[in-house]
View 1: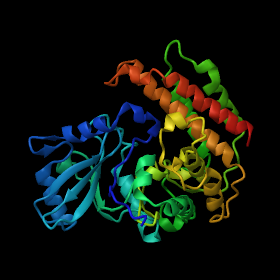
View 2 (view 1 turned 180 degrees about the horizontal axis):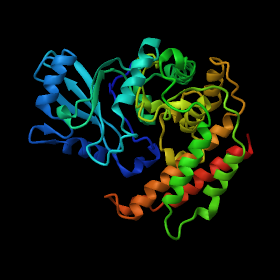
View 3 (view 1 turned 45 degrees about the horizontal axis):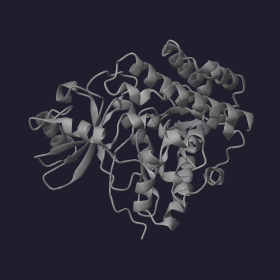
Length: 382
């Protein structure tokens, strides 16, 4: 009872799940199917990767490769050897690669540092930096079986009512565990700057928003206004922690009891303010009454039995010494950041840089304004 009936691993939405309307289930299936051509799979040099894995991780040839997460983010493949053993392989996208955004060495370094500290990550097995093997660096880790919840129907089909209630508590406790990691002991103190995380984030996303302006669409200046208010009221950073950067339910693999088996997608992990992770978790922890419910869709957390946002916050607070009284600021920042990211998607579609139905983004200006308004309301009522 409560055991996952459909197992999925390392499948991932884009870092910005509010773009979900751009790729429906059929589109995703088509993406994965199109990756296989002439018995080869895009992004994998079958012969040389097989040889490398046999030598470095003990895989037994022949190997089969299946793309299970793709797009603009790093690509993840399920690799199965002749014995039926499975591995997960991560590599950068095959095009439009920004080294700082798709750094395999960095990802491998992070999970290698966290795994011995009992943080739930997939066990790292090997890193290849020789680009003659597969064009780009890649790494291999264990393949973690479990459930990844993307929508309400999956949550209802996978976990019993009583089990759903425990998921939020465990997700919050696991995040607190990550934030408690001693970065010096973990060997991660050189990963990034230690101070000014929110200031840098505000500058980064404000700059991107301004660069992605669309003629005739300014959202009545609310994005800029909220950005100014956020910049003028930044809480004092309490601690320098490992910040995942995109910690949410569908970036974790759960066991049959609803406990986190593995945290996925360390692509934008850095050092910074742990409250930013908590705020974004609460943004994505959708409730049926949320004004942004139409954007987030039928999120798994809207199913009966899931903890409320306040209960998730209380669970995190019970596992940390950090003061969570300013978390509303970080929630507001999360909503505002998503508005800036959504503006980038809208601008690319408006410029014709992305293939697809242009009508699918016609509502984006309204949604961007809604996110900014939600950020403003969250700031005002904190």
